[in-house]
Image 1 (cartoon, rainbow, N blue to C red):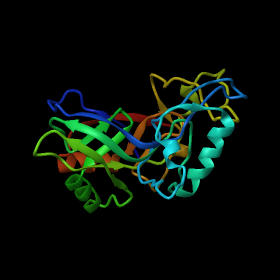
Image 2 (image 1 turned 90 degrees about the vertical axis):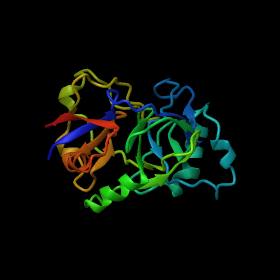
Image 3 (image 1 turned 180 degrees about the horizontal axis):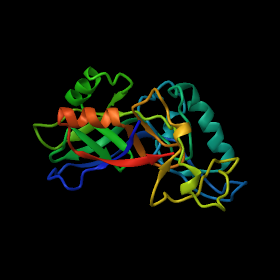
Length: 237
């Protein structure tokens, strides 16, 4: 099986622009007692999550950093609403993508650049090609034009790791308390084939904010003429 990294196609003439964020946010960590880091990363998103049953949902609307005990308490509040296989991290985004959009878009789009979007018709066509594992979640994007697309966000589970051969030999393990990995994305990313899922055609790596798809997904998009993104080959070992 071959794998590809999905990125925005900057060579296209599409003018689409999106100014949006997810409805709810897990707070970042303020001064982790184990690694001393203050950090948050909103690249991990679960748009299917609905926090309206949570009494304190308003506490999740503002992006901010909190002491680790408060961060962990808030994680436990949302954990029952997460999809199977989801992993939380400081700054994780929850709920629908809300905001404004304008311009011309392809059938596929990548926003910010970690959140993959697909138009309704394209999503239906991909599922008809046999890609039944795709989970599209409605967005709440307001377009400044009459002829506007209906975008869904693909919910990606964190699965798979980078191969140790592409990482610094003297790297430290993730923080045992807050989970911070603390490494920059390698210039030549190499996937660990033993950790890659057999049941998913598109997913997000656990280690880095990288969208990965199988050749089956890439070939279906190309066969159907779905544009707006590029597929960059990745090596797996």
